[in-house]
Image (tube, rainbow, N blue to C red; front, side, top):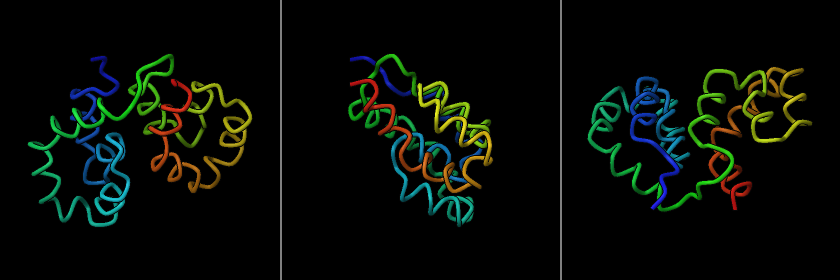
Length: 127
């Protein structure tokens, strides 16, 4: 089976996990949002996730399609350069990339939207 997601990337995003980044990466936007607003359930859930990441990775690998657009690169670009739309340029979405660039990620709302839907956007491109 081809791997769409990476355990290493999950642990790297876990460093920012008290903000839910690793949970969004693995396609869990509801708990990612909860982690974001509660600092990883007051850091307790964040610590427990150290043990849960391998299972979340396996679930994501079964759920999402590997293809031309790499999930790991897209998530790195979103996490660190999302306000500039670089992840959208990478996915070939030039118009919205320019829009994000000019509006700092649609004033942050677009970045949150992409945290919720990036895996599905990539999945659609890779099918």
